[in-house]
Length: 236
Image 1 (cartoon, helix red, strand yellow):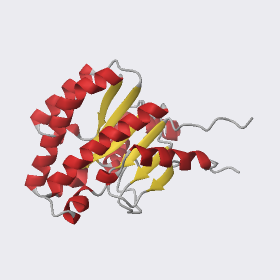
Image 2: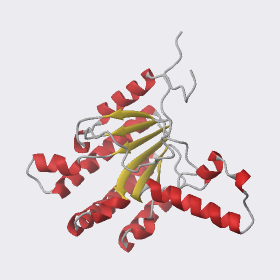
Image 3: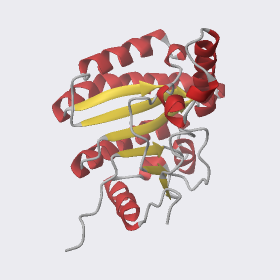
């Protein structure tokens, strides 16, 4: 009897194409972001059904702060509404909410709603939803290096102590497993400063469709493709 296909423990998603989805329909970009929020719900539900333990969504990059102020404001308002509306749903589904990134850069109102939602769901155990907000992987790795330099200056660390495991322990994701599967929508063939350390051996699946068109069936198909691959991790 063949072995049962392995479900990825951790899936990471670059949710790309909201603005282009809206442009194709003659709509404001904020409508694309609003439509993308429904795809988040579908993605979470699909992961719950499959038994995926961790789902990390690239929701707002550190580079996104350079977008027009009205679009950034609309994104923050959308995030606040998402947190207000989905906190109760996450409680019912036993989903824990986490966030990684420069969270101190978020508006105070947004930070407070995020903090409340994370505290409310902290004891949930079925799945962990991680939102990457104001996140940039180069900044994350730079902060880790800076922290280790401080430890060395204080005499708590010597060069021989520095291992991949030590570096990983200084990242935002120190208590999370590395993603097994990375999904990107919109057809772009790049990782856009997202989890550069953590996705070193992740399987990658690219979808040409924009994020608002990504549904449960697409996530199921991505997992099927992942299951058909042989992960060698540099071996044979």
